[in-house]
Image 1: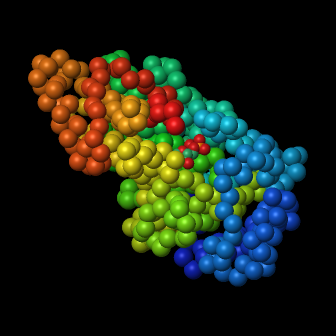
Image 2: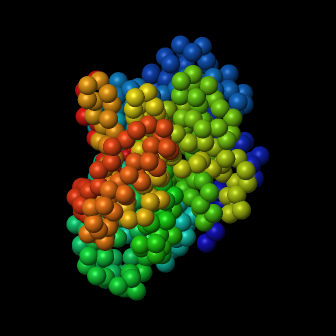
Length: 432
Ligand code: DLL
């Protein structure tokens, strides 16, 4: 199968028309039905009729996570509660969760989007889709599940955790596509090795990994250890969940399904729209959603858009894999540091495992960044001198890449907490 839905290869001109029509309908509906948007648009002096072309999108106000929180739980829903058939929420580490609602049509659209992602990752109705994203309020599990069913594949609702059992059933049931976070995929690979499961017993051919940042270096490691093709899937609950964008076989950026979401890249400081190719904050506008549709939602994720044609035939624009978040950015002695940059350096140094954590502290008013990384069991048994050399090499390479001094701590194999969902990469102990 080349693609799931013909809209994926629609001519650009037709796609632009479809986007404009849907954007107009959405803005009109939100103006009528959501008091928050009516007052926001009134404040901005914008009437739905002012929307003449897609270029007018940038005149619309942004929506932020705080807007969702201020209208907790259902204040931004655009339909009466009796039309909502599903609720999801993202836990968030601080404050109230953000709550999202779907109508029956929204669930169908979402399943269609996820079916597109599974096909883009090489899936067909013959596949057994092992869903090891968490089921529950998190959108990962049920999102992938409904998509697999929509495709006509077999959904295996494993959820996260109990990794040995995951491996056993993967072998017994012949799972062919693994869906989970990249950090959990590494955890599964490690447990598989410990259980001494021969690779021939595992039928996995591809993996659909996302929900957290990861690097190309980590992809290589996962692909090698599990011998499969790993695809990056992106999404966020506020916008729909998984299925906003996916890497096709080319693996050069993730196609954003523009018939449902309009992506923009803005300068996070000024809010100005940046041209294609420039890096900035991703912003999405829902144009095909009934329950909760957001205008210009600021994701805080950093990426850039690529408008060049893709050899896969999909006409939808691509976004570069997420390279960081505006709020994940650590400022260490004035230097901006993203955990993904450290990951990239670590993954290129032999002898290290892909398990790492960054611990930030402030001692005598000075920020200290400690990079804790596990070494492989072979390296761990090396002489002290070799370990010291390795430590120095990591320190030098991270330092020269980031432009800021770091402390390095080599950790014993298996000493860093394994993830079963989103990995915790940063522990910030600074009290500011
Ligand atoms: O993580 C939805 C999802 C589930 C996506 C399964 C992919 C697979 P939230 O819990 O609302 O939703 O978290 C959304 O996670 O703003 C990004 O910061 C991050 N994120 C999601 N996918 C990726 C990715 C789900 N592929 C937040 N790369 C987003 C980097 C990602 N970060």
